[in-house]
Amino acid sequence: MPQNEPPRFDELLAAARRSAIHLEMRDGYAVPDEADDYRRWRETGERDADPTSPYWAPWVEMVRTATARGVVMRRVRIISEPVSDYIRYEHAGTVVNALAGEDVRWLPRGQAVGLLVPAVDGWLFDDEQLLLNHFTGTGEWAEHAMELCTEPDIVTAYANAVETVWDRAIPHDQYKIR
Image (tube, rainbow, N blue to C red; front, side):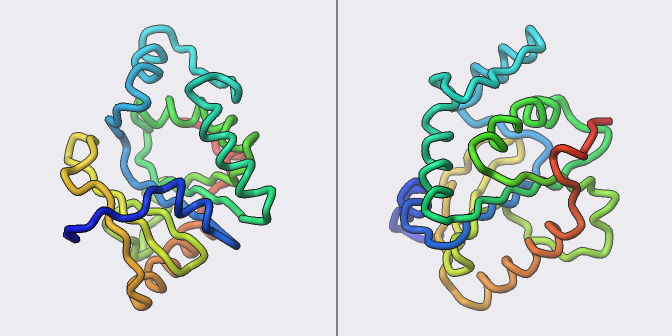
């Protein structure tokens, strides 16, 4: 792991010129910034889907700012079926990602057979910088949660893998939770 802190996500997104693509492969995350919203959803079945809410507004603003300058934002999630409660929660909030300007797709693991995918979630910026996201087995951020990779061979391999996943994945408005 690198000793230096990588640039923050918002800095990398602000510097992106063409694209920002997120690959997510876990069936559950336990990150602090969504803990209250997830707990409320589990208790009530109601998900915050207001793009102007304190929970969503900062994200919506970042996405809208990036897409307004021409950055294409995509997110693809590889998921198990039947889906976990956490994936149901994510699916319920994805309408806000889409309203903000993200193109989101879902790929059931059973349809990923034959694909070679990275072992780590990450954000790919302009096919040049890869911000790898490291989690513990229970979904919390790992000690060195983020790692910036600019090694051309690794970035290219990751980009190619994400594109094969994207091509096979189902657009959000067509994916129905099972």
